[in-house]
Image 1 (cartoon, helix red, strand yellow):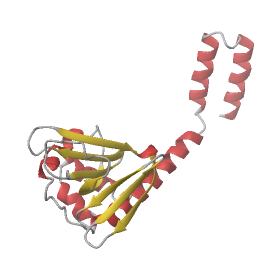
Image 2 (cartoon, one colour; image 1 turned 30 degrees about the vertical axis):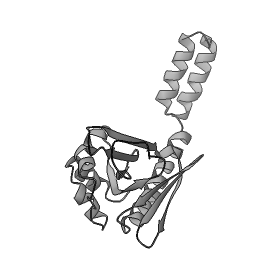
Image 3 (cartoon, helix red, strand yellow; image 1 turned 135 degrees about the horizontal axis):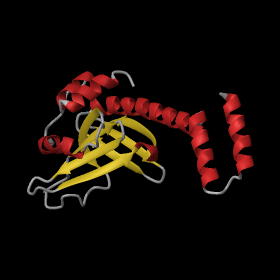
Amino acid sequence: MDRFETYRALTEARDWPGICRLNGVELDNVGINRELDVLADFLEDGEVIFALTSGNMSQTDKSNSYDFGPNTWLVALTSERFLAIDHSMLTRSVAMHSIRHEWVEKVSAAQGWMLGKVIIDLRDHSVVIRVFQKASAPVFTELAGRWLATFRSERRDAETATPSPIDQLEKLGALKSSGVLSEEEFEARKRKILEQM
């Protein structure tokens, strides 16, 4: 993805407004200050944030049930997943939802009169985020689409990559050691691998 190292540096600096500015939108931090304060606690080692948005999220009406009214979620598009956090107003409780990229079929946006929507389609259902800052919905969705395409391409490449001759020889040695291959079979296969080098 373009500017990956810039996103990494901003994530490491915990510069959440800087990530939004890089994407051409302002961080709408109304109602999510507590979530922003704990966001870094929920990141995995090396995880990079590409986009942030906030709003109400479908299927989360039981999260932090001591709060009054609908919960406001901070949603981050990261290099690993979609990460949603809701920090309780009255307690230290933090609800978190994580949607790994491999589960996502597609991400789309819709614009309403007052709010935007980000729709994350999974294999068996959709998660809808009613985005408070309408302008962030298409930006978030466009970045998600680009990153998912990169993610899928890298996965396909990894799955279709031919193992190196060293990896093939190690596997062959393990098969011989476990008794699956005889000495003659091992030598014949080893010779073929070495001839391809």
